[in-house]
Length: 60
View (tube, rainbow, N blue to C red):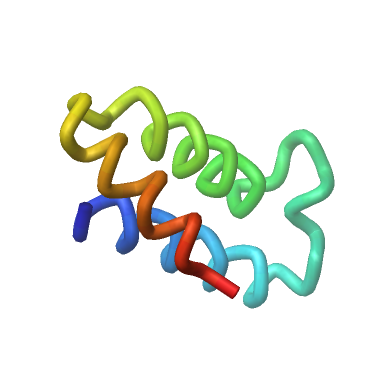
């Protein structure tokens, strides 16, 4: 869970630093963001996925 959270926060920082240039297909920030999203799903065991869904349900 912590690794996935770190990946999301790192991706958000990369997007912020790039001033939105992450929308460009060749952008490194965009690549980091896409990889974090994929890792956030594919890198989860069933137990972690359940915890992630529970956390998302609690988020505002």
